[in-house]
Length: 431
Image (cartoon, rainbow, N blue to C red; front, top):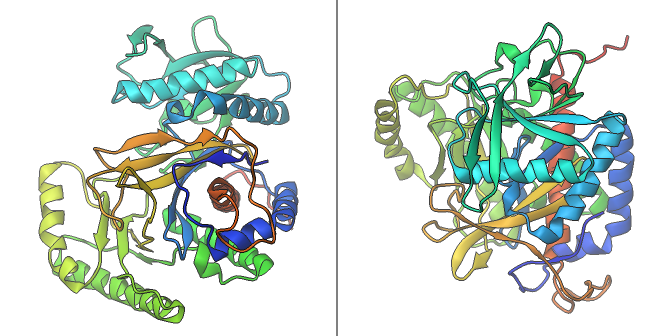
């Protein structure tokens, strides 16, 4: 289910990790039973932070990019998972239309598109890349630094279907997070499978909804493991209908931030943690001009208003969000060559298919690493098959950190499946 991979880290296995490794059979059975009841998102990636005393997801993406950062050794896992998921959804599938972001911002994003095309081609499908960007009016070929090419073709909408000239797909794979809203061309397509569904996009999704679902599943896994769910769950709060450019709005936000910091302090005291607690502030509805702001204490709040005014001024026509997610900050103790790092776990269907470290030399252990200047270090296969042995004391066997990442990643994926069920506009209502 989850491959053993070697990471750049060789630190001792801590108590939480040992508890998870010892409970592997129970955890795997629990996931199997969950997947009998719930449908996993088609694909997903999860940013995980390992503070040593706590391991938790901080973001779950249902339209993951960066597939090009997976190592070639991981490709067979992705291809196998793609085969399994397509077989389940559309066994007779022949043609797949991949729809990327509009105006792809970089060749690295297009390298991600090329990798997805490769995975589904190897899974036995004819794959073409169709753009819904109004600027793409004819087939446009872009050469990547690797020498590979991606051809973007304009998507054609008939009354009931989407396709390209001379290409009629049965499956549409979106790699566009719909943060600008759902374009009309994608609506009311009932004869083809659209994966992920439109309500997985940021036009509908809310981070607070996702983390509420995650809180629920982490409590259940915590009970199974006999651990405090806080050790795998970042606490959060939501500040609604707030105008961040008004002093009253900032006061409202400050009240929520202070309350959450007080809760974190109590937990740190309970566990004897000496680190300084912090929270992160971000828009509840996905990618936004606000970005991710770290707040450690009241004086950080005092400097926030000028920064927000600067963001608002610097991006005319871009409004600041009204609904804010305030999330417990999780430190990262991960390091690669002295630079701060965090693992990102990639999944397709219910399977972990790989991952990489996001590394940022210019950021601290309590800051967002998903920022300009970040680099990526793939997680690679271990040469030997040495696995940590259950039942031995922490640190006495080789770390299998990636199994832990996979459990947390799949837990976030399960939360996403709960979330998608709850927000599905076409869900059947049972009396």
